[in-house]
Image (tube, rainbow, N blue to C red):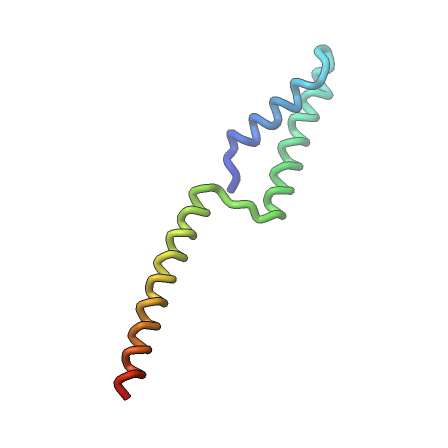
Length: 80
């Protein structure tokens, strides 16, 4: 899931664009902006940096294992 702090920062920046004295609109924009951004990012299947790094590490280990298996297969084939 996306970092709640980023959603909060985005909402605050958007809210700051609304002139003072329009509290109802300000609250509505804050609420709607946060929901809209959350839904959009969910549809885009955006992941956190931590999730990305974890999957990157898994992929690197898988590649290493695949290369080792390919070398073993090549060695077994050459002994035939």
